Each structure stands twice: as structure tokens, then as C-alpha cells.
Amino acid sequence: MPSLREAYELRRPVLEQVAARLEIELLDHFEGRAHIDRISFRTKAVDSFVDKAKRDLAPPYEHPLGEIEDQIAGRILVFFTEDVTETVDHLNKLLKPVEYDHKRPTRYNEFDYESVHGVYTFPPPYLVPGWGDHDDMPQTFEMQVRTLFQHAYAEPQHDLGYKPDVPIDEDIRRELAWVAAGCWGGDQALERIRSLVANAE
Amino acid sequence: MKLFRLFGFAIEPQRLTHPDDFVDPLGGQLTIEATLRNALDRSLRTAEDSGNLTGVVLDVDTQPDGERSSLVRDAVRGLAFGKKKVGRSSALELARQLSRAMDERSLECLLLIAAYKEDDGDVRRVAAWIFPQDEAFRFSPGGDTNSAIELLTEIFSRTSGLRKMALFSGKDIKSHFIQGQVLDFQQGRRDDVSDFWIERFLEAKLAITPATGTKVLGEALRNASKASDLSLVERRQVHAAALAMHVAPKGAVSLQSVADTFLSGKAKQVFLDTAENDETRTSSFKLDHAALEERVKVRNFLVEEDVWVSAPIDKVGDGKVVQLDEDMDGAAPVERLRIEADVIEDQLAARRHA
Image 1 (spheres, each protein chain N blue to C red):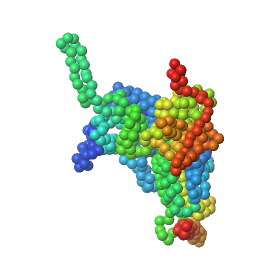
Image 2 (cartoon, rainbow over the protein chains, first blue to last red):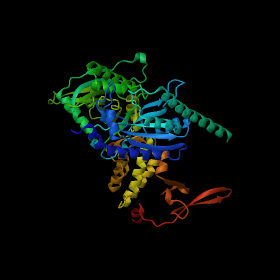
Image 3 (cartoon, rainbow over the protein chains, first blue to last red):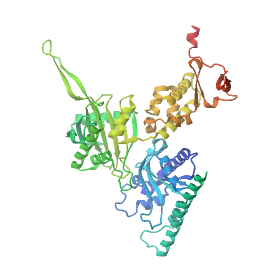
Image 4 (cartoon, each protein chain N blue to C red):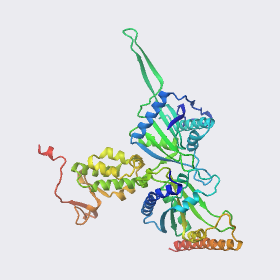
């Protein structure tokens, strides 16, 4: 019986093929649409998968190979905040969502990570030969849709890699909030400018 | 897998019934007799081997704290994993849902809900069948004066072409029991069936969206049209299939249904080989005609005197086999079509020369 790590390593080539297929299909689906900066997909790294599977959650993962939904994940970056909803609507013409979450701070005076997260089922035509050879393949994958400014905050912030049990210094929190606020402000300004330019035409 | 729960309900259409007048369907849990178990196992195998399964996705609550809930998903999971009381209430919920989905166009039917489990695993399966009400004669031959015939009315046909099935399987986890498969033995009238069984009862959508399905169909038609060594008949079939899809009325198709209707031989094989798995081959999807025109570019001209000319789009234009000129006819511009080419095949030539 293979270990969890071995089982995930065995399936990863097939996951990569499906991720590549999804990327091609989405690029085709969005071809010609304005304000799309990039569309990209990735498969979860082996270490990252194993770490997530063993995370101390309540409830814990009983079937991580089937339960962990970001084994394949995609991201669409757009120019303006108004593009996010339109992009999700266009995405939903191709894919079937089962979960949708606009992650953002809940209080007006907080600035932090902001992005649309969706969970989608795999369209049967995108599943490559060999997909069915593995037990317990995921039935869903994740998509994120965000602006370039939201991404400019999210990626470095994620890369800093906080440990959930290590408290973060208050000054660091404040600086990060300032960066997030700046990104939020950048998005608002771009949207205002876009509207002014459109009205002037 | 082993059948461990079975429920049956007699379902009458109550879609137009006021909620205050709604009557719960009669029925409940059934004893699993060996003959019934074997019959259902056979029916399930037949369904899975039929090549007519269509993937569906339930419309669930997509809010992050909505737990991907839907009436059908919750009921199916209750049947699969819940204790006895939950199983019974879940079955009744599905029966009520079906009754609310059916209007007077549907016959009264028997709803059978079967739950299966693995001997040593976590996967469960739930199959929901409907069998329409029918009438039959029971004849007891007994000689010249002892024969008897009885009209049976409270029966439900296990082999009727109007029967339907929905199948869900998985583990008790967040991402399972959202997708399922349906089988509709009824050929034709796909819109009505789709509305009733998939949209109103299951509250689901076809797993392949119009955008995805139409793209795959376009690829399949292009692959078939480019295949080498097709006979003239097969090439004509592919061309006819492309034209037909462009003008097909609204409804659902599958690669398999298109292949079975229009194609044969190598053309059919190449067309179906575009599907990399069985579910892509057999699952229905609604055509997106605008997208199909983008993908399978065929121009169709109606000229004077009811003459039709069709050609691949890249064969129309200056220097091409089909040329379009613009002339002035009086004050108004008019397009004129010119074709000059060797005839490779004349379908009616044999009759013409007879």
C-alpha cells in the first residue's frame, strides 16, 4: 500500500496534464476579452500536499487524496475591480461552480487579503486518459480571480509564510495592512480613471 | 456493492397542486427480497453498460458556509450515510420532490430508491429509478371454459422506454455527491425530459456546459472531416452532420447521439475518438449555435429557384472554388455565386443514366 506521499507522486503527472488542459481551454475561452492580464494553472507540490493533509484541522482530512481540492488550482488576473465579476460570469459559462467566496476584510477599517475564490467540478472532456486509473481522484479544483493590485499584495504576503501558531508583531501587521490599503486604493483609483476616460469618449 | 436500503413510493403529479393541498406520496421502506435485489442489480448493470449515461451537476448552495447543500444532495447523502430514521425521511423528501416536479404530462410512476455500500470501504452509491404506471393482462389459460383474463392496473413497467435513473456515488466528503449520472431510456423529446428529470427533480444542470460541449463537437466534426481514407459516403455523412448541427432545433445532443444518427464506418470511429473518456462520449449537452458557427465554419447559400450550395468557409472567396461577386442589380447591390469545378460524385447519377 503506497504512502500518502507516494500516492500523490504517482498521480501528479496526470494532475499536471489536466491542469495544462484547463489552462489551454480557459485561454481559448477568454481569447479576445479585454483586461485579462494572465491565466495560469498549477498542481500542488508534493510537500505542500503532504503538509496540508497532515495539518491539525477540525475535523481532520480522512481522505486527503479525494478531499483536498486545490491539487489543481488556477488563477485569472484582471486589470480592474469591475472586471472581476464579469470574468467570473464568463468563467461560469465554461465551468460549473460548487462554491464561491469573495474573500475580503469584513470591517470597513481593515485592509488585508482580497480575492474571489471558486471551487469547480471538472468538465468530463478535460479529464485525460489515465485519470480514472487512480483511486480517489479529486472531483473539484480551485480558481481565483483577482486584480493585479490584489495579486501584488497576496503573493508576497503569502510568500512570507506565517506560521499560524507564531504571533505576528503588531508593527508588521500595521505595515502589511498599509500595503493592502495601498493596493485597495490603487484599484479604486484605476476604476475611477477608467470611468472618467470612458465618459470623456 | 451490496444493496442495503430500498424504498418505494407511488408518485402522482402534484406540480400544480397548492402547497396546502399537497399529499405525501404513499410508500416507504421495502424488504430486500433476493429476486428484487437481483432485478435491480441487473437493471443497474444494464444502465451502466448502455452507453447512454449523462453527467449532471447538482445546483448546490455555493456560499462558503452553505455546505454545498441542496435538497437532493442532502437527501441522497442521508440515504447513503444516515441512520435509519434519516434514511427514511430522506427517501420521503425525494419522493415529495419528484411529485412536485411532475405535472399532468407525466404518468403516475413508481419511485424506487436503492442505496448500496462496499463491504470494506467508504464508498456508497444511491440509485433512484422511476418506472411509469402501465396496464397489463394476466391470462390464465384453463381450457375451453376455464380460461380467465384479468386487467392489472396497479403495475409499473420495468422495461418501459419512459423509465429513468439517477445515480450518485462517493464518500461522505465535501466534494462528493455533487456530480451524478442520469439515464433516460426515452429517445427524442429531450427537452421535456431534461426539464422534468434533471432540472425540476434533481435541480441539476448537465455536466458539460454548452460552451465546452459545442467545442468538443466542433473538434470531432473537424477531425472526422480531415480523416484520411474516408469513403465518399462517409465524407458526405460528415458534411451532412455539420450542416444538421448548425440548424438543429434547441435541445441536447451527445457525441454518441450525433455519431449514431449521422455517421458510420471510419468517419464514426474518428469522430468518437475525439472523446477521451466514456462520459465525454455519452453525456448530453445543449448546443451553442453561435459557438458552433465559430468552430465549424460552413457557409450555406440559398440561391434562386430553391438551389442550396454549402461549402467549408475556407473554400469561399476570391480564387476559391466558390466565388462571391457583388453586382449591381438596378439600384441595389446583389451577391452572385459562381462555382466551376469538376464533379467528383453525383448522388443521383445512377438513376439519371438509367
